[in-house]
Amino acid sequence: MRIWIKSLLPETVLRYLSQIRQIWFTTYAKESYSQEGEDMLLDRFLEYREPGFYVDVGAHHPMRFSNTFRLYRKGWRGINIDANPGSMEMFQRVRPRDINIEAAVSSTHQELTYYIFNEPALNTFKKDLALERVGGIYSIIKEVNIMTEPLRKLLDQHLPANTSIDLLTIDVEGLDYDVLLSNDWSRYSPEFILAECLELSALDHAKSDPVVNLLFEHHYTMVAKTMHTVLFRLTLPDPTGTSNEARMR
Picture 1 (cartoon, helix red, strand yellow):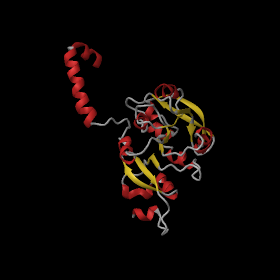
Picture 2 (tube, one colour):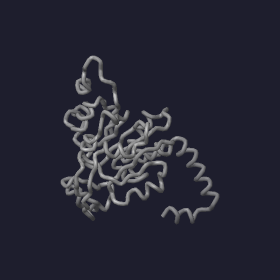
Picture 3 (cartoon, helix red, strand yellow):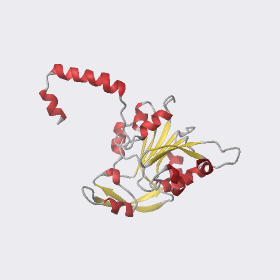
Picture 4 (tube, one colour):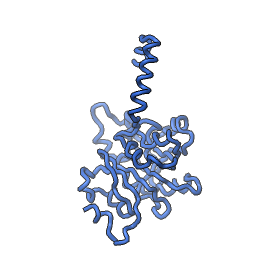
C-alpha cells in the first residue's frame, strides 16, 4: 500500500515529505523496537555508556519486539538465543556482529515440548500458557520436542573471553524464572536485567513474584517497570545488612 501511494505522488512532494520526516521525526522522536518500550528505559540508564555487551534470551526477531536492536544500532554487540527452529537465519543477516544461537534455555538439561504459534512471539514451552492463547486469530501450528540447556552452559560455551555482560534480557513466555535459576551468579552477574514478571501486577506486590524474589537474593533492585517487564540493576550488598526486600517496604 505504501509503495502504491508513493507511486502516485510527484517527486517534489516526496522530497518535501522526506524533509519533514527528517526535521520532525528524526530530530524529535525516537524509534522503539521493543514490545512495551523497554529499549526506551534502557536508553535512559545507558545513555552515556560506551557500547557494551548484552545477552538476549528469547530474542525472537532481530528487530521486531527486540529489546536489543536499538543498542545494536548504537554499536553494542552480544549473544542472541532463541529456540524457534530457523530463527537465527535472519539474525545472521541483520545482526552479523552478534553471536546468534538457536537453543532453548531452562533450569536443567531436559527435553521439553515447544508450542509454535502462527504468531511466533507467542511460542512457549508452557502448555497451560499455550492453551490459554489459542483462540481468535491465534493457533498452534506445530509442536516439537527440543532439548534445553542451562544458561550457564551456553555462556560458558559462547561468551567471548574477558567479556562482562552489561545487560541480560529474558522473554521466554513463562520460563523467565527457570532461565534465571539456571545462571551461574558467581560468574555471570550483569549490571542490568530485563525480565518478565507476570505475577507482579503492581510494584507494592513485589514479594508475590518469584523472579523478583530470586533477583533480590542476588543483590538486584527494581529500577523501572513496564506492563509486564521489570528492569533490575545490580547493587552492592548493603553494609547494614538490610535486604532489598526490606528496603522496598
